[in-house]
Length: 102
Image (cartoon, rainbow, N blue to C red):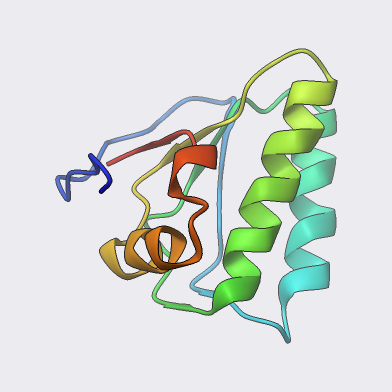
């Protein structure tokens, strides 16, 4: 069982980037590359508030972003993870791997 809350977290940091509205298999490669570039430039958080359409590819991208940030020595915070994506992470058993705040 996860401990995710559904209250949105407001982000305004220059170190935060946002997902797009869609993160599916069709857009995963482009999203991955864009996020990796932001992480490479020092981003430490990703805001998922815009995310309205997603599939399991979104989980893979979020986990890859977290691995990349960890490799740089800085954890990546995931904020405003949609409830549906949080449920999907729980169903796949990867919810504990995501450092998500809602």
